[in-house]
Amino acid sequence: MKVDGCRDDAPEEIVRTHLERLIQSSRFNASEKQKRFLKFIVEQTLQGRATQLKAYTVAIAVYDRPSSFNPQVDPIVRVEAGRLRRALENYYLASNEVSPVRIEIPKGAYVPLFKDTRQSRGGDDWQQKASGRELLLPGPSIVLMPLKNLSGNEERDYFADGLTEELTSELARFQDLSVIAAQSAMHFKDQEADPKKIGQELGVRFLLAGSIRIGIAEIKTTIQLFDTLTAEQVWGMSYKEKLAAVDLIAMQETIAQQVVGSIADHYGLINRRLSKESRKKRPSDLKTYDAVLKFYHYETVLTLESFKQALNALEEAVQLDPNYGLAWAMLGHLHADNHALGFLDRADSLDKALACTKKGMALDKDNQFVQDAITLVHFHRGDKKLFLKSVTETVALNPNAPYIVGVAGWHLCLYGEWERGRDLLAKGMVLNPYHPRWFHLALFMDYYHQGDYENAFAEALKFNYPDLFYDPLMRAAALSRMGKVHEAQKAAEELLELVPDFSSKAKELIGKYVKVPDLIDKIIEGLIPAGLKITKRASREPPFL
Image (cartoon, rainbow, N blue to C red; front, top):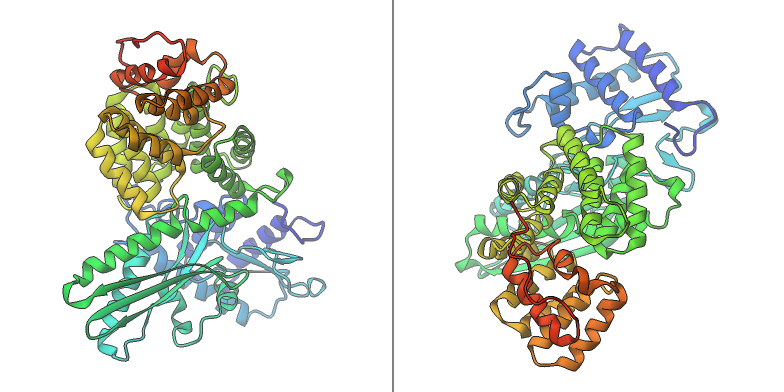
């Protein structure tokens, strides 16, 4: 590992040497388990696996907890981290030795910091850039400030405290988001929040803050998201309810789900902002998490260029960190998409998708996106029984994750499970207004199979991916059914520009996503008046097992 801004000597060797001396020192007052804890998190960080340092992984590796370990029930990792943090602080305070490095564990996190204490470095942090602070925690990180009660009545504190707890609980469901709980920010509670100062002290990129006002007839909640690098407010929302009619507990749950869905989801504000930044970096600058952001960008735009960038970045990522389950799952997801959308001419894409997602499951089976990736592969392999089972298991891991819940509903609709699919898709779209536009493909199919072509056409316009053949296909099929044959023919011409031999492959291409034979027939029947010469009836063999 080479950290930006370091000397020519390898920092990992300095850290390891210091760690061994520290562990052997009689002045380091830590238990053997705590020393094992420290060695584990330092090694994982040096090997580029900091993204996997969660309470769960530490509990399994260090404290021999079973795979059913639940950090919400068993607080051993949080408690031991606090003791280890104090032992380190006491050691450095009492030690007369001038060490070249100081190891610290930020409050609320398990990823250690390595601070250069050499005079020639002027006390700079090895995890800083010369041009500005780099994130101390890997990937997206956020601190939740205790919500303020501005009602002028301390008896109303219970609502602010309850909503703070609900927000913390919902944020913690997103496994790739490092969350610093409100308790770690308590000493900032009565101060005017300075996002930059808080971000630097706690080592986080984003800060979530807010307040509540409860009047005689109304309750108002305001929430803001800040970027601690710039102190810029990047998102905000207010909620108002009539006090007499509101169930306060239900209101807390609704607010927390909507806030977290908007900012922490795969396509929420945090990942959208970080993904935009990652696209400015040269490929040689990419790190493992930047590959994840490349994937998120691809999923948003669905272009050949973004597909190639994400594929290359993730292939490099699994080479750098072969134990990163999420990267393997995303790589499998890309191969599955290639099977369905044909970005690259590779006959073995679905086999590669299965192999990569199985690898991801073996490494990180409790990660909801990893589970979603294997669900996607079952969908494309046409194994409906395994697909339906996997959908249920995926949603159960976090029923309030907008992207995953929406995708589950999307796939269910395309398999003809309309009622359940519509409910989940609608929930995902409500919880996160920044959902991907391709969600509208399933809504188009739902309206089209019902014969509601006006609404189907409206959904086709919302899809808006001009590089994908489904874009003109949906418009052509709906317009011809609406009697607008001339416009349908123009859309069909666009379709043939994207896929010149579409007429000979129509059933196969449509069937990559539409798993309802009668619906495939109906789409083809709608395309024929648009001038496409396609065999009218699709094969009666169902595209699933």
